[in-house]
Length: 268
Image (cartoon, rainbow, N blue to C red; front, side, top):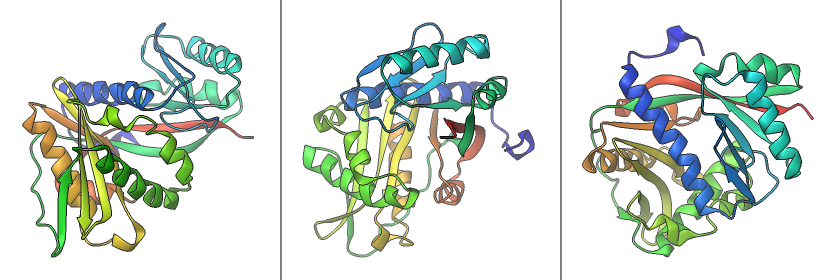
């Protein structure tokens, strides 16, 4: 994604959004039984509860933009070698200098996703007939949200068991820093989204719709509710990272692209 494809957003808004993105790694580390997690010396490093190298599990992210790319990469290599894990290295726009280092080491770009933000509440769509939306209040709500995501993210080649492994401690999603939503028809969970609150920013994560419930506006509905939950708690900016499926939905709600992150993994 070139700079020309970015939307007009303030540096202050982008900084708040990026802070929430970093906080989302901490939260995901808390929800699963990580082997190891650290973020000292300018690099966030997470060895997850399964060997799968993916975002929020077995991944590295440079936190200090002044840290030399070779030094950031060397830290990741030592950390994951010690924990016997393959891993992904995640880059953002400010990490352009890191990308040649990764490529030289045999990493290839697997996925590029737009980072998006919104600075005012979204218009909440009217739920379709027969659909109700409930906030997370019990671990059953979390289980229902996970069941939705297991089906939804299978379309992105993420195995259901790997989705479930992110949520080993469902009770930890019933805290003040998380607001979650599940859309139901009768007692069948169809769609979900959750909000992570972090100071003056919030982020929308785990937006998903079951295959049989797609094209009914449910992803947009849950995203709008999650977005507005962030503003209701005092956020100045709400952010999310979009898939190719979700980006048009978020655009319609008013989200703008402020950055891009990429997943790099070794070619083997």
